[in-house]
Structures are given as structure tokens and as C-alpha cells.
Length: 101
Image (tube, rainbow, N blue to C red):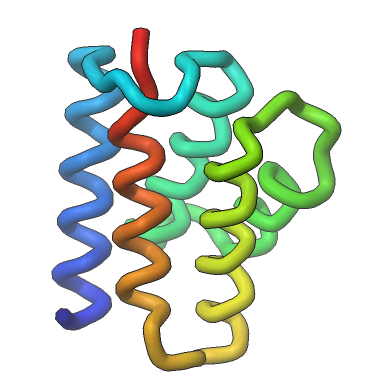
């Protein structure tokens, strides 16, 4: 799957999450929602990766452990241009989509 297709998929998933508030997996906390918004901006090329790095790794915000790990994996794979970055982005997007009410 191309990076552009992944970005569009991630944007669509997260936009649906933010607009409808549906989900049921990870807790719906302000920290989780905020980091997912930053993630959406990064994958749609509206923010630099450093913003996601700060929002994910350089904060004491109570982000869910799974979400923080999956975003950290995406960041690491992306900045190192590693194979599998599309899958890492899809996993992080699925985490964001799973945020419940």
C-alpha cells in the first residue's frame, strides 16, 4: 500500500473518530484524542514529524500505553525510512479509531 493511500486512510479514520466520537477500544481521554489529532496532521503532511514525537514521547500526558507504543513505532520506522512504515501507520490509525466514548 502506498504512503499516500495510507495517509488518506488514516485521515479518513481519524476524521470519522473526531466527528462521531465512536469507538470502543482505548479510553477516550483528552491526551489520547490530542495525540491522535497530531498524528492525523503528520500523516496528511500538515505538521512535521517532530510535533508527533513531542506529543508522543516528550510529554507526561496520560496517553494509553498501547497508543504511545504504536505511535513510537510509527515515528521510528518513518524517520529511518524502514519497510513496514505503512503497516505501523495503519496500526496507529486503528488505535486512534478504537478510542471509545
